[in-house]
Length: 363
Ligand code: ATP
Image (tube, rainbow, N blue to C red):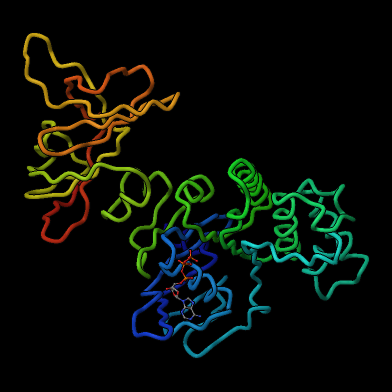
Protein backbone atom coordinates (compact mmCIF):
# COMPACT_ATOMS: atom_id res chain seq x y z
CA UNK A 1 0.00 0.00 0.00
CA UNK A 2 2.79 2.40 0.99
CA UNK A 3 4.69 1.46 -2.11
CA UNK A 4 1.74 2.39 -4.34
CA UNK A 5 1.37 5.68 -2.52
CA UNK A 6 5.08 6.44 -2.96
CA UNK A 7 4.94 5.63 -6.69
CA UNK A 8 2.03 8.03 -7.06
CA UNK A 9 3.76 11.00 -5.50
CA UNK A 10 4.84 13.64 -8.01
CA UNK A 11 5.84 16.56 -5.78
CA UNK A 12 6.92 16.46 -2.18
CA UNK A 13 7.80 19.43 0.00
CA UNK A 14 9.36 18.75 3.38
CA UNK A 15 9.78 21.28 6.19
CA UNK A 16 9.82 24.39 3.98
CA UNK A 17 10.60 27.47 6.04
CA UNK A 18 11.12 31.06 4.94
CA UNK A 19 11.49 34.47 6.62
CA UNK A 20 12.09 37.78 4.88
CA UNK A 21 13.12 40.94 6.75
CA UNK A 22 11.87 39.96 10.20
CA UNK A 23 12.50 36.75 12.18
CA UNK A 24 8.81 35.89 11.82
CA UNK A 25 8.38 32.89 9.55
CA UNK A 26 6.24 33.58 6.50
CA UNK A 27 6.37 29.88 5.61
CA UNK A 28 6.72 27.68 8.67
CA UNK A 29 7.54 23.99 8.32
CA UNK A 30 5.32 23.37 5.31
CA UNK A 31 5.18 19.74 4.14
CA UNK A 32 2.79 18.20 1.65
CA UNK A 33 2.76 15.81 -1.29
CA UNK A 34 0.93 16.04 -4.61
CA UNK A 35 0.06 12.87 -6.48
CA UNK A 36 0.25 12.34 -10.22
CA UNK A 37 -2.86 13.60 -12.03
CA UNK A 38 -3.97 15.40 -8.87
CA UNK A 39 -5.22 18.96 -8.53
CA UNK A 40 -4.07 20.24 -5.15
CA UNK A 41 -4.93 23.63 -3.61
CA UNK A 42 -3.17 25.77 -1.03
CA UNK A 43 -6.02 27.72 0.56
CA UNK A 44 -5.71 30.47 3.14
CA UNK A 45 -6.27 34.15 3.90
CA UNK A 46 -4.21 36.91 2.34
CA UNK A 47 -0.65 36.99 3.68
CA UNK A 48 -0.60 33.42 5.06
CA UNK A 49 2.36 32.41 2.87
CA UNK A 50 0.69 30.60 -0.06
CA UNK A 51 2.41 32.52 -2.85
CA UNK A 52 5.79 32.32 -1.13
CA UNK A 53 5.37 28.52 -0.93
CA UNK A 54 4.49 28.45 -4.64
CA UNK A 55 7.46 30.65 -5.52
CA UNK A 56 9.80 28.33 -3.60
CA UNK A 57 8.47 25.37 -5.61
CA UNK A 58 8.87 27.35 -8.84
CA UNK A 59 12.44 28.34 -7.92
CA UNK A 60 11.80 32.10 -7.76
CA UNK A 61 12.49 32.10 -4.03
CA UNK A 62 15.01 30.15 -1.92
CA UNK A 63 13.74 28.60 1.33
CA UNK A 64 15.76 29.04 4.54
CA UNK A 65 15.36 25.31 5.09
CA UNK A 66 13.44 22.32 3.79
CA UNK A 67 13.39 20.58 0.47
CA UNK A 68 11.33 20.20 -2.70
CA UNK A 69 11.44 16.96 -4.68
CA UNK A 70 9.70 16.61 -8.04
CA UNK A 71 9.48 13.19 -9.59
CA UNK A 72 12.32 11.90 -7.39
CA UNK A 73 14.57 14.83 -8.42
CA UNK A 74 15.61 17.22 -5.64
CA UNK A 75 14.91 20.78 -6.85
CA UNK A 76 16.02 22.52 -3.69
CA UNK A 77 17.43 21.44 -0.34
CA UNK A 78 20.63 19.91 0.92
CA UNK A 79 22.65 22.59 -0.93
CA UNK A 80 21.15 21.75 -4.34
CA UNK A 81 19.21 24.25 -6.45
CA UNK A 82 17.69 23.63 -9.88
CA UNK A 83 17.06 26.79 -11.94
CA UNK A 84 13.35 27.62 -12.54
CA UNK A 85 13.53 26.93 -16.30
CA UNK A 86 15.10 23.53 -15.64
CA UNK A 87 12.36 22.34 -13.28
CA UNK A 88 9.73 21.12 -15.75
CA UNK A 89 7.09 23.27 -14.07
CA UNK A 90 4.51 25.50 -15.82
CA UNK A 91 2.96 28.65 -14.35
CA UNK A 92 -0.25 30.57 -14.81
CA UNK A 93 -0.49 33.87 -12.99
CA UNK A 94 -3.39 36.08 -11.98
CA UNK A 95 -2.63 38.67 -14.68
CA UNK A 96 -2.21 36.09 -17.50
CA UNK A 97 1.08 37.80 -18.54
CA UNK A 98 0.39 37.36 -22.29
CA UNK A 99 2.50 39.25 -24.81
CA UNK A 100 0.10 41.89 -26.14
CA UNK A 101 1.97 42.39 -29.43
CA UNK A 102 1.95 38.69 -30.35
CA UNK A 103 -1.06 36.80 -31.77
CA UNK A 104 -2.52 33.96 -29.72
CA UNK A 105 -0.67 31.21 -31.58
CA UNK A 106 2.72 32.92 -31.11
CA UNK A 107 1.97 33.39 -27.41
CA UNK A 108 1.44 29.64 -27.09
CA UNK A 109 4.48 28.82 -29.25
CA UNK A 110 6.60 30.94 -26.93
CA UNK A 111 6.45 28.23 -24.27
CA UNK A 112 7.90 25.65 -26.67
CA UNK A 113 11.64 25.68 -26.86
CA UNK A 114 14.23 23.50 -28.59
CA UNK A 115 11.72 22.34 -31.21
CA UNK A 116 11.72 23.26 -34.95
CA UNK A 117 9.33 26.10 -35.81
CA UNK A 118 6.92 23.95 -37.85
CA UNK A 119 6.57 21.47 -35.01
CA UNK A 120 6.12 24.29 -32.49
CA UNK A 121 3.25 25.64 -34.55
CA UNK A 122 1.59 22.23 -34.82
CA UNK A 123 1.89 21.59 -31.10
CA UNK A 124 0.57 25.03 -30.24
CA UNK A 125 -2.40 24.55 -32.55
CA UNK A 126 -3.16 21.19 -31.01
CA UNK A 127 -3.34 22.73 -27.53
CA UNK A 128 -5.43 25.65 -28.80
CA UNK A 129 -7.89 23.14 -30.31
CA UNK A 130 -8.08 21.28 -27.02
CA UNK A 131 -8.87 24.60 -25.29
CA UNK A 132 -11.55 25.46 -27.84
CA UNK A 133 -9.47 28.43 -29.05
CA UNK A 134 -8.62 27.35 -32.61
CA UNK A 135 -10.58 30.15 -34.26
CA UNK A 136 -8.76 32.78 -32.18
CA UNK A 137 -5.27 31.72 -33.26
CA UNK A 138 -4.48 34.94 -35.15
CA UNK A 139 -6.15 37.40 -32.79
CA UNK A 140 -4.28 39.68 -30.42
CA UNK A 141 -4.81 39.05 -26.71
CA UNK A 142 -6.64 42.40 -26.34
CA UNK A 143 -9.29 41.15 -28.82
CA UNK A 144 -10.24 38.35 -26.41
CA UNK A 145 -12.45 38.23 -23.31
CA UNK A 146 -10.86 37.74 -19.88
CA UNK A 147 -11.87 34.08 -19.85
CA UNK A 148 -10.39 33.50 -23.32
CA UNK A 149 -7.15 35.24 -22.33
CA UNK A 150 -6.95 33.02 -19.30
CA UNK A 151 -7.36 29.94 -21.47
CA UNK A 152 -4.56 31.19 -23.77
CA UNK A 153 -2.32 31.63 -20.72
CA UNK A 154 -3.17 28.10 -19.70
CA UNK A 155 -2.55 26.80 -23.23
CA UNK A 156 0.88 28.44 -23.19
CA UNK A 157 1.69 26.88 -19.82
CA UNK A 158 0.58 23.35 -20.73
CA UNK A 159 1.92 23.24 -24.34
CA UNK A 160 5.41 22.11 -23.21
CA UNK A 161 3.64 19.38 -21.12
CA UNK A 162 5.19 20.32 -17.79
CA UNK A 163 5.15 17.72 -15.06
CA UNK A 164 3.40 20.14 -12.73
CA UNK A 165 1.37 23.27 -13.33
CA UNK A 166 1.34 26.07 -10.75
CA UNK A 167 -1.75 28.28 -10.76
CA UNK A 168 -1.56 31.49 -8.70
CA UNK A 169 -5.07 32.90 -8.21
CA UNK A 170 -5.67 32.38 -11.94
CA UNK A 171 -9.39 33.16 -11.91
CA UNK A 172 -9.46 36.20 -9.65
CA UNK A 173 -9.52 38.76 -12.48
CA UNK A 174 -12.66 37.25 -13.99
CA UNK A 175 -16.17 38.33 -13.07
CA UNK A 176 -18.26 35.92 -11.01
CA UNK A 177 -20.12 34.17 -13.86
CA UNK A 178 -17.04 33.80 -16.07
CA UNK A 179 -15.00 32.69 -13.08
CA UNK A 180 -17.28 29.71 -12.40
CA UNK A 181 -17.45 28.56 -16.00
CA UNK A 182 -13.71 29.08 -16.70
CA UNK A 183 -12.87 27.23 -13.50
CA UNK A 184 -14.88 24.16 -14.42
CA UNK A 185 -13.59 24.22 -18.03
CA UNK A 186 -9.99 24.43 -16.83
CA UNK A 187 -10.56 21.63 -14.33
CA UNK A 188 -11.94 19.30 -16.98
CA UNK A 189 -9.10 20.23 -19.39
CA UNK A 190 -6.49 19.42 -16.75
CA UNK A 191 -8.23 16.14 -16.00
CA UNK A 192 -8.47 15.28 -19.70
CA UNK A 193 -4.76 16.00 -20.13
CA UNK A 194 -3.99 13.98 -16.96
CA UNK A 195 -1.98 16.90 -15.53
CA UNK A 196 -1.04 17.61 -11.94
CA UNK A 197 -1.63 21.14 -10.70
CA UNK A 198 -1.11 23.24 -7.60
CA UNK A 199 -3.61 26.06 -7.19
CA UNK A 200 -3.07 28.94 -4.78
CA UNK A 201 -6.25 30.72 -3.72
CA UNK A 202 -7.90 32.58 -0.85
CA UNK A 203 -11.34 31.68 -2.23
CA UNK A 204 -12.87 28.76 -0.31
CA UNK A 205 -15.49 27.96 -2.91
CA UNK A 206 -12.84 27.91 -5.63
CA UNK A 207 -10.65 25.48 -3.71
CA UNK A 208 -13.60 23.26 -2.78
CA UNK A 209 -14.90 23.00 -6.33
CA UNK A 210 -11.57 22.90 -8.22
CA UNK A 211 -9.23 20.76 -6.16
CA UNK A 212 -9.04 17.04 -5.42
CA UNK A 213 -7.33 17.83 -2.12
CA UNK A 214 -6.80 21.02 -0.16
CA UNK A 215 -4.13 22.18 2.30
CA UNK A 216 -5.55 24.91 4.53
CA UNK A 217 -2.85 27.42 5.55
CA UNK A 218 -2.86 29.89 8.39
CA UNK A 219 0.03 32.16 9.42
CA UNK A 220 2.62 30.20 7.48
CA UNK A 221 1.54 26.75 8.66
CA UNK A 222 -0.65 24.06 7.20
CA UNK A 223 -3.49 23.32 9.62
CA UNK A 224 -5.15 20.50 7.69
CA UNK A 225 -4.87 18.56 4.45
CA UNK A 226 -7.80 16.62 3.06
CA UNK A 227 -10.38 16.22 0.33
CA UNK A 228 -12.86 19.11 0.01
CA UNK A 229 -15.44 17.02 1.88
CA UNK A 230 -12.98 16.19 4.69
CA UNK A 231 -11.86 19.75 5.34
CA UNK A 232 -15.41 21.08 5.10
CA UNK A 233 -17.27 18.42 7.05
CA UNK A 234 -14.50 17.41 9.46
CA UNK A 235 -12.41 20.49 10.17
CA UNK A 236 -9.75 19.76 12.75
CA UNK A 237 -9.24 23.26 14.06
CA UNK A 238 -11.30 26.31 14.85
CA UNK A 239 -9.54 28.22 12.07
CA UNK A 240 -10.35 25.61 9.40
CA UNK A 241 -13.97 25.36 10.59
CA UNK A 242 -14.46 29.12 10.34
CA UNK A 243 -12.41 29.77 7.20
CA UNK A 244 -14.23 27.18 5.13
CA UNK A 245 -17.71 28.55 5.65
CA UNK A 246 -20.18 29.56 8.29
CA UNK A 247 -20.28 27.45 11.39
CA UNK A 248 -21.64 27.39 14.93
CA UNK A 249 -18.90 26.99 17.54
CA UNK A 250 -20.27 25.57 20.75
CA UNK A 251 -18.59 24.81 24.04
CA UNK A 252 -20.00 21.68 25.67
CA UNK A 253 -19.30 18.85 28.10
CA UNK A 254 -18.43 15.65 26.29
CA UNK A 255 -19.01 12.19 27.70
CA UNK A 256 -17.72 9.62 25.24
CA UNK A 257 -19.73 9.58 22.01
CA UNK A 258 -21.99 12.56 22.82
CA UNK A 259 -22.05 15.97 24.51
CA UNK A 260 -24.62 18.08 26.29
CA UNK A 261 -25.22 21.38 24.48
CA UNK A 262 -27.75 24.23 24.62
CA UNK A 263 -29.99 22.28 22.30
CA UNK A 264 -29.78 18.95 23.99
CA UNK A 265 -27.53 15.96 23.61
CA UNK A 266 -25.65 15.78 20.32
CA UNK A 267 -23.60 12.97 18.87
CA UNK A 268 -19.90 13.62 18.30
CA UNK A 269 -17.82 12.67 15.27
CA UNK A 270 -15.32 11.04 17.67
CA UNK A 271 -15.41 10.26 21.37
CA UNK A 272 -14.15 12.93 23.78
CA UNK A 273 -14.18 13.70 27.49
CA UNK A 274 -14.58 16.97 29.33
CA UNK A 275 -14.92 20.52 28.04
CA UNK A 276 -14.81 20.57 24.22
CA UNK A 277 -15.35 23.03 21.40
CA UNK A 278 -17.71 21.72 18.75
CA UNK A 279 -18.36 22.89 15.21
CA UNK A 280 -21.82 22.38 13.73
CA UNK A 281 -22.51 23.72 10.24
CA UNK A 282 -25.81 25.65 9.96
CA UNK A 283 -27.07 23.18 7.35
CA UNK A 284 -26.54 20.37 9.84
CA UNK A 285 -29.22 21.82 12.11
CA UNK A 286 -32.93 22.09 11.53
CA UNK A 287 -35.74 24.01 13.20
CA UNK A 288 -38.89 22.39 14.51
CA UNK A 289 -42.12 23.50 16.12
CA UNK A 290 -42.19 22.77 19.86
CA UNK A 291 -44.45 19.94 20.92
CA UNK A 292 -47.88 21.44 21.74
CA UNK A 293 -48.43 19.16 24.71
CA UNK A 294 -45.24 20.37 26.33
CA UNK A 295 -44.91 24.09 26.20
CA UNK A 296 -41.18 24.08 26.74
CA UNK A 297 -39.13 25.23 23.79
CA UNK A 298 -35.50 25.96 23.29
CA UNK A 299 -35.28 29.19 21.43
CA UNK A 300 -36.80 32.04 19.53
CA UNK A 301 -36.32 32.98 15.86
CA UNK A 302 -34.47 36.30 15.76
CA UNK A 303 -34.31 36.75 11.99
CA UNK A 304 -35.13 35.00 8.76
CA UNK A 305 -33.08 35.54 5.61
CA UNK A 306 -35.01 34.11 2.63
CA UNK A 307 -32.68 33.44 -0.29
CA UNK A 308 -34.95 31.61 -2.73
CA UNK A 309 -33.92 28.02 -2.62
CA UNK A 310 -32.86 28.17 1.03
CA UNK A 311 -33.38 30.14 4.21
CA UNK A 312 -30.95 31.19 6.95
CA UNK A 313 -32.41 31.62 10.41
CA UNK A 314 -30.81 33.16 13.45
CA UNK A 315 -32.19 31.54 16.57
CA UNK A 316 -31.56 32.74 20.12
CA UNK A 317 -31.12 30.02 22.69
CA UNK A 318 -30.64 31.45 26.17
CA UNK A 319 -27.83 33.98 25.88
CA UNK A 320 -26.44 32.92 22.52
CA UNK A 321 -27.46 32.88 18.89
CA UNK A 322 -26.96 30.14 16.37
CA UNK A 323 -27.41 29.94 12.63
CA UNK A 324 -29.57 27.37 10.89
CA UNK A 325 -29.77 26.87 7.10
CA UNK A 326 -32.90 25.09 5.96
CA UNK A 327 -34.52 24.51 2.61
CA UNK A 328 -37.34 26.90 1.69
CA UNK A 329 -40.07 24.58 2.97
CA UNK A 330 -39.10 25.04 6.61
CA UNK A 331 -41.11 28.15 7.32
CA UNK A 332 -40.89 30.19 10.51
CA UNK A 333 -40.99 33.88 11.32
CA UNK A 334 -39.11 36.17 13.67
CA UNK A 335 -40.51 35.77 17.18
CA UNK A 336 -41.61 32.13 16.71
CA UNK A 337 -40.74 29.75 19.52
CA UNK A 338 -38.81 26.80 18.13
CA UNK A 339 -36.67 23.80 18.91
CA UNK A 340 -33.41 23.01 17.16
CA UNK A 341 -32.39 19.52 16.19
CA UNK A 342 -28.95 18.45 14.91
CA UNK A 343 -29.07 16.35 11.75
CA UNK A 344 -25.41 15.29 11.86
CA UNK A 345 -22.80 14.58 14.50
CA UNK A 346 -20.98 17.66 15.79
CA UNK A 347 -17.26 17.88 14.99
CA UNK A 348 -14.90 17.96 17.98
CA UNK A 349 -12.17 20.54 17.32
CA UNK A 350 -8.60 20.14 18.45
CA UNK A 351 -8.10 22.60 21.28
CA UNK A 352 -5.54 22.67 24.06
CA UNK A 353 -6.54 20.73 27.20
CA UNK A 354 -9.13 18.55 25.54
CA UNK A 355 -8.84 14.86 26.04
CA UNK A 356 -9.81 12.98 22.87
CA UNK A 357 -10.23 9.25 22.93
CA UNK A 358 -8.86 7.41 19.95
CA UNK A 359 -11.77 5.98 18.00
CA UNK A 360 -11.58 2.21 17.95
CA UNK A 361 -11.61 0.64 14.53
CA UNK A 362 -14.37 -1.90 14.06
CA UNK A 363 -13.36 -5.50 14.73
P1 ATP B 1 -1.98 36.86 -0.94
O1 ATP B 1 -3.16 35.95 -1.11
O2 ATP B 1 -2.33 38.22 -0.45
O3 ATP B 1 -1.05 36.88 -2.12
P2 ATP B 1 -0.26 34.94 0.37
O4 ATP B 1 -0.89 34.00 1.32
O5 ATP B 1 0.05 34.43 -0.98
O6 ATP B 1 -1.12 36.24 0.28
P3 ATP B 1 2.50 35.69 0.50
O7 ATP B 1 2.45 36.49 -0.74
O8 ATP B 1 3.23 34.42 0.49
O9 ATP B 1 1.05 35.46 1.08
O10 ATP B 1 3.12 36.64 1.64
C1 ATP B 1 3.26 36.21 2.98
C2 ATP B 1 3.93 37.31 3.78
O11 ATP B 1 5.27 37.48 3.33
C3 ATP B 1 3.26 38.68 3.65
O12 ATP B 1 3.24 39.28 4.89
C4 ATP B 1 4.14 39.40 2.67
O13 ATP B 1 4.11 40.78 2.91
C5 ATP B 1 5.52 38.82 2.97
N1 ATP B 1 6.39 38.82 1.78
C6 ATP B 1 6.18 38.15 0.64
N2 ATP B 1 7.20 38.35 -0.24
C7 ATP B 1 8.08 39.18 0.38
C8 ATP B 1 9.35 39.76 0.01
N3 ATP B 1 9.90 39.51 -1.16
N4 ATP B 1 9.96 40.56 0.92
C9 ATP B 1 9.41 40.79 2.13
N5 ATP B 1 8.24 40.28 2.53
C10 ATP B 1 7.57 39.48 1.68
